[in-house]
Image (cartoon, rainbow, N blue to C red):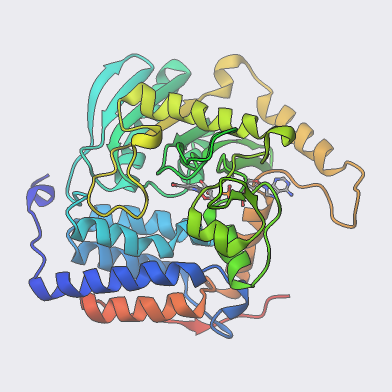
Length: 398
Ligand SMILES: NC(=O)c1ccc[n+]([C@@H]2O[C@H](COP(=O)([O-])OP(=O)(O)OC[C@H]3O[C@@H](n4cnc5c(N)ncnc54)[C@H](O)[C@@H]3O)[C@@H](O)[C@H]2O)c1
């Protein structure tokens, strides 16, 4: 606790450099997701990723323990193949600390605790630290009452929802987590962004198997439009609106406007269901907790206001309902995977692609980063005065 209360003062030169670097990293965001530009034959071992992020976060004010929480989370996102929410978020976190928009030493606090439910105030701390605290509380409650539900306010970007789901799954519980985010989604029939990508995740372990759904409630994340833009490709109808408020297939126009369509796309393709899911996330996050919500949340480019995001965490003990749930889930998942297919590829269940991504990292001996990510990390290391990430030769992968 004492260590937490010691504010780490940034030295002026480091601060100047971080601001410059953060701006540079924001520009670089548009090229982070090209998969064809990894550093040839080189990977970064998972532990080295954790070491680098921990040292970087510690350098800008987080205590070592909290810095390691953020590092473990961002590494896991990259490990699972969600590069849009891993290492490339480090710059945004550093920028928010630098701009005094996030307090890197804040301690989350339980402000309301009633049997299976609780309300947590994140005190504007690091999103992953607040998220871990809140899910641990939900897990404790599920172990006692069969279910635990925690709604959280006063938080920041907390990374991938699936991380918290997995925390509950490790304890053989069903996990659920969701978060509100900066406005990007245009509700059905509107022309203005008023909800975030508002992702949610639910998961449960089965016998030698698992189901881990982890998804945004927009048709796609902005990152997928960035990929299309960088490849000079059009985007499908139903992903985004252009400046005229009409559906656009021009990736550049879509990227400039930041107006994503809800999951499902246009009204005739049931986009109102994705819109409804986005509001559902707000119900559990912003509305329950009293954080900012919907269009009242800062835009993601706004460096002048605190985020005050809301999250929701739920853990459910299947055994509280009786026995056999794990076996039934195994049965269901194997039935789904065995279904006849329309093309050469087999039916998947949520979480399969992430398992494939992790298996690849394990076989290669580390995470394959885009060459620009490696370069930026090297510059960040120099400016913060931390040891640069060490790359190693990739092991053979078929
Ligand atoms: N914190 C934030 O602000 C924020 C905002 C948006 C997204 N995110 C995170 O970004 C990540 C990516 O989100 P996304 O919506 O782009 O995910 P996605 O579209 O890549 O995958 C969504 C889900 O679909 C499953 N899936 C993919 N292909 C499948 C198939 N063929 N059959 C069955 N299931 C399949 C995946 O396993 C995953 O569970 C998530 O981890 C999410 O939590 C975070």
